[in-house]
Length: 280
Image (tube, rainbow, N blue to C red; front, top):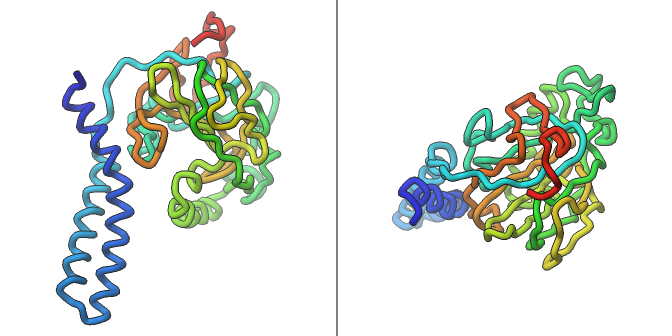
């Protein structure tokens, strides 16, 4: 039987983003009604909207995380990748529980001897994605699974590699979030794992998704290529485990690989370095 913390985390995940969307709509409708001199109803709607937004904010930033044994999976990439926003360093790893991101990790390709444009030192604010070593690299299935969602309709955009470009990135996040999960995740694949939980691989390269909904995949199978779609500043792979297929109502769940998920700035252990087979 799940403990109280898990129950609260799951409930928070279910209501967080619906409350945010409902609150925003209620406030807009309430303001319109007040302007039309329907004051009583308008004020009530506005007040209800504010309450919903407070609920959403509390759930997003202060909600509990699920404490459970992490599920062992295979790395979803090959080669040398560094961690950013790792759950090994903090939970929630991205500073928010929204979209099931409590235990998400961002992986950035860092092959030996291959330069990567660094933020603020890249020689430009908006670089083409192929300037980054992660772009176009294979993304692999971390376990035997069933594809429950495969999105491949978003374009790859240029990087946001300076503080001025980073400011634009935050402004862009508003319309992207209004588009729903795809606006944030970009092209992505959601897998249903053997235990009934789900795994998301996001920001995939346009035109690279090689699987379709309902397809069975095996551990290590290429699913797509790393891209720069959705809410990103540079090409990287965002991956996370969650309870439901939809990130809109998902609660993040812990996961790991042999050797452990690296902390921020550390390198993900390859299968050979971890002394593991390709089986999760």
